[in-house]
Image (cartoon, rainbow, N blue to C red; front, side, top):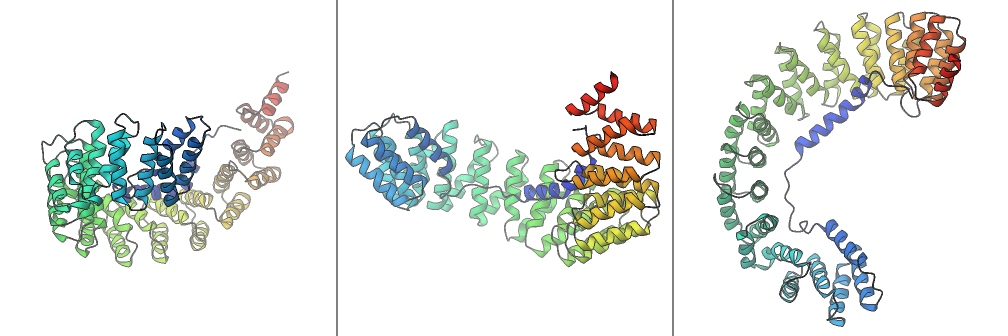
Length: 519
């Protein structure tokens, strides 16, 4: 209803979600679909439905084909195969025999009947060379080649050139890893060599397949790709898969890449890979980078991943780094990392920092993340911090923390501060954040509180803050209160304040009120 003049309240509620999203993104594994997933069933079904819908025929053949479509959608693979097989036998001259051959092969593939799949696809490709299903049929034939041992089809796909064939090459490479892993690894080594004309997508998928299939030869190739300057995306993928190995021989390389200053993204990928390696030596390396990394950026990245380990050793390491550190930005990163760990140790350290004689910046940072925990024990600590602090800046941060907690006790405490704190500044800060809560759907309680608070208040500046806070809500009750103040409050200054904020509203009732005043 009214313009939001301060969006900072959104930050606290989204900060934890943002950190979770970032973590999920950082943890997402580069992925190449397995042979079972490569058919892209969702897209295939959409194509099948469009095909059926484009035909308005209502004869027996069309009805039989639609029955097969329905069985495919229901994943009744055996019945679907029987239905499309009967269709081909019963209507050999029908215009949709090519489509029926494809979906018969699709249903057979789902049952693992790969030799039958191959024979039906061969028939489709040979008998219907101009069919719109040819490209799909050839792709499926390559996909199952690893199961049927048809290296001729794989070779043809891998030797193809041009953009349309690149997708087929990826499928062929998957099949080759099933049929002949050694030869597949050798092929990947060739396309990943410097000067290779293979495009990024093929290289990137080749790296993932190599990483998934493992082995000494794979690690040697991945190491070479990771070490060699070139396409950053492909290098990062290779670095990721090195981190998935159990081989400690890769650790010195990952540490060197992490410390390399030439490419920030490669460095970040290397720190992440070290953090995911299960070796205690890798864990030790991440800790070393957190303490003594060559750049602030590198140290902050390593500190983040130390914090994600969530064990006593990592907490002790973070605490030691914090206590020994002098750089404010590094200490802030440590506070965040500590806040992401569960339990009493994490909460206790945040409280210790919040109560310390550290810089106000660090104390406020600790208070913010303590409030983000949102549990009852953290709420108790926030209450105690509010009661024990006289520093107005710190109290304002505690009040902000209260406003970000979904805990009902925190909301009640915020209202208590607004109503009866001995500090006018603290009262106004609480009033502001109660108004911000009133923007949320279902928060009429906040508006009712502000209305009642206004009626009992005598301080003009505090009443102005209440008017402003009411104006920030999306409530008709708030609108009516502002009109009441604008029309009949005995204080002209407050009437002007209410009228000003009504003038900022796009609500028709507010505009009508302003027009009446102007008459």
